[in-house]
Length: 260
Length: 278
Image (cartoon, rainbow over the protein chains, first blue to last red):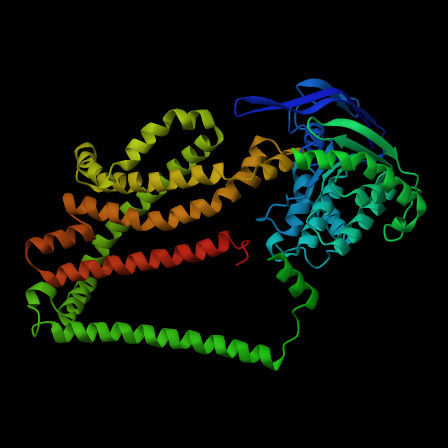
């Protein structure tokens, strides 16, 4: 079910206002099946660009990305995709949103209904089946999006600052929920964030990108147990050590980005 | 917005206290007051008309509420009202349906194929700037003085409103919705059905609300120009005879029909856009 990702020599540039700007330069990275990897870096370092290339939303023009043994050439339907901006459809109820991927993948009605009820209950949204996203709080909308991803159970989850808009406490609750899901299902996860603490709390490896053009600057393997408590992990010495090393790698990039 | 929603959700909304009842009673009282005042304004207007007619202003110009009421009553009894109204409504409805269908399909097509939209853009802008009423004489030459030319006028008017609104609605679709739906397994058709059409619906509904009265206007203008039946025909015929009572009777019928259609559309909008939280 889970899948590995092989990124080889990927470059990406944008042409705007008569000039070409290099967003990603020669990125090589291997992500093992079932691994939880976080991307961190200053704004505009191309971490979201790389994630969108794995999802097949942006074309891979130079280099190659192989996901689950298949080269990514168009929309990648073998992944689940979640962003900071809400992607749940505002005109569909919570239930209809969670049901949508199943419907699109041709799952029979009876199975769909059972699966949707199960997933909504799993994220604690039982009783809100017929609510429209506009009637739910920001955190509840995130949980609808999570239930939607889990409903069709993709082997890889691509998440671009999914909890970025939530307040600190809610963020912790969502992180805990995500880790619980990952521990149970062992999906391959690519998690883009600008929050170092979040990256260390969740990931097994943290990839630091340098700013403009984006290159991989450092890869930190997080020396924390795979089974972790998101509320306590930040008080462990290993967490502090990882945070210090990553901050040393990241801070000059952020300063450089601010000066530019 | 989400902050307040969070609070409401956290607090929960199941307690019916005395305060809830008091607030609801206040809302009901206010609604009743509005209705009473509305009726009073109508009555006052008719009373003023009654007093003015023959005393301050010549009856030939403004007729009188009694004469207009009597005319409407007679039209209802002898079938004039229904015969002519049904023809006007039929032309309006056909024009509306044809204009909507063509406008909506072309709007979707142009919205999805940017190149085509860019090529046709100056021509569409040019045709759009023509007052559609100016096409009415042409349609009468093409389709004759029967119902077909009225259908054509109202269809032409409705077409542009719906076409432009649908096109804008399709262009405004959030690309994130399109991408996530495709990743979840949706093809072109699914994206159209689950994302583009519902997302454009609010624009289309706005277009519908604007265009139904226009469809009525188109039909009536066609009837003014040349016809042998319809409410527009009744009004123009009465005008020729200086029969002000019939003119007013015809105008009142149009006003009532327009108000009914608009109210129906308001309910349709509320249902289609029920996911929009005020």
